Image (cartoon, rainbow, N blue to C red):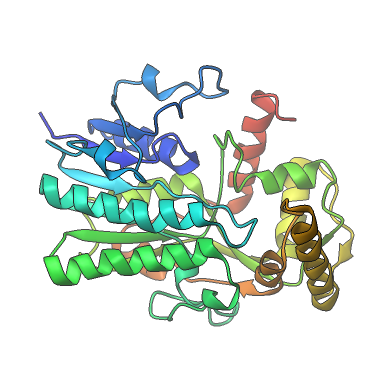
Amino acid sequence: MAKPVLVTGANGFLGRHLVAELRRRGLPVRALLRPGSQPAASPLPTLTSLPIEIREGDITQPASLMGAADGCSAIIHAAALAQVNPARNLAVGAVNLGGTEAVLALARQAGIERLVYVGTANVFGFGTRQAPGDETRPYAGQRYGLDYMDSKQAATAAVLRAVAQEQLPAVLVHPTFMLGPGDAKPTSNALLLELYRGQLPGYPAGGKNYVHVRDVAVATVNALTQGRVGESYILGSQDLSYREAFQLMAATMGGPMPRWPIPAALARLYGRGCDVWARLSGRPAQLNSAMVAVANDGHYFSARKAISELHLPQTPIDQAIAEAFDWFKTNHYV
């Protein structure tokens, strides 16, 4: 019988798709869940109802992980904290960097055959529509002052050090902005709900790359046997300005299109005002100046390398939007 694959963050948006893809291929799965992270009432089937092994542990508490990877052939490390508001948040570093260091120690102890680390495309320099960023471009996110981006960059560096210094057999995958069904929290797909509900008054000046979450899961599982150790792969699909993306989302879901372009200078002013309100109130505002700076930029990326070496699928983004919206309707979010 094949050895199981340990999946961290198995009950997250991407994690559930990873488990489904592994099971589709007949691979045994050991899902690492934080204690108490599997709610009794959920719009998704609980992982405990699937034919997988459940192991509880907290990646910010290394002692709780003792033996979690014993007998496993590989680890897919997908657990992360993607909060960007507030911009500075100690918990983000504890999960994204501290948790990755704990998983690296786990991989060493278990002698696993491959570790697939799930990062973010934002650890690379972004480009224009004509010359999108790729895996060769150095990190440019330090300009924003976001602990999320900085911690993911530091975690990526930690994995690469382990490869170089300890010959850890790791492959790194870096998704762009994921859309698709099953986002129960919701996380990235919250953008679709906000647009459909008419909560977005306008569209920012920038843009970004979008990808179907199921394509990310396929390429990530492919990385267990494909790709080169020590290499990074951007998992993306379609570059769209926010205007183009919102038009596509509105047309696909039948919701209103935000009417007004938001000038970059006006957005920056609003972001600074939100920062002041957050400092005075002690609570995060609707957004912050770092989030505004990201939205004003064009975060465009090429996935050519992952398409070639990890056989990353390229599902049309309108299909990802339609599947996400159908899932939201089926599960009474709208």
